Image (cartoon, rainbow, N blue to C red; front, side, top):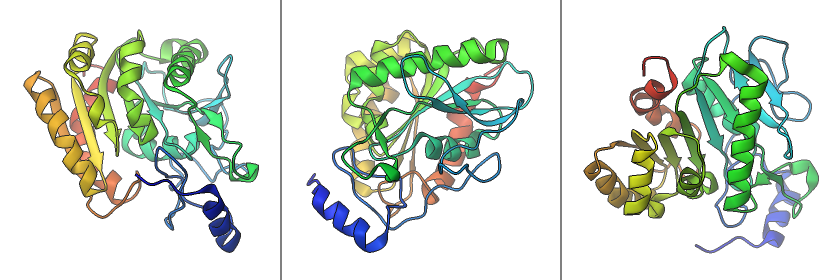
Length: 277
């Protein structure tokens, strides 16, 4: 894949203002003329353009993670206990956008936890985009964020396998996280990436550690093509597998992709997150 030179990116931004779209390739940032995710669960974002911070009880909150930047978490209403969906964003993305999108599918039935990653410094700081500097760095941050969630919310967090959602870079790092963490991942959702990492050993480890389902989502035909082989091998290993496709939607996680994902999300992911699943 050819990368977009940073100089060209800055020229585009100078002509059209700061980039509005949160999605980019896992290699270098690109700017696509598409709307940002809508705000979910609670009112308009705060002045920083990310997650609104609301009062006790429910809503989108900041979560302090020792040793790392604050994560964003959507807290379900009620006492619980609730399962946890942890979302890994793409390169040139924001955690609040991930939490906004996936909370639309979770609909208050589980925690949605979105670790922040590292602020990119190769672009204007006001653009506020993040990445994960390495697989190992993401692994450490996700484990720390999950521990912080449990320490902060105590008995409201269920002791059960979690679900993982990864977009682009977050999908590419998914299998590496599954194989490194002590967390049990009941369901994995990979959007626009991460297909080539499902080796026989990775599938075996995922299944042995509680993995039940893998859900792929694609907005490009190349992604649909790349998903076919891992889907075949995952099914052969006895895992529940599905694919949501929105041809022409592009490299993203908005709009038609989310709409196409809704039925498969209910079938594959929510049983992991809800009691009795």
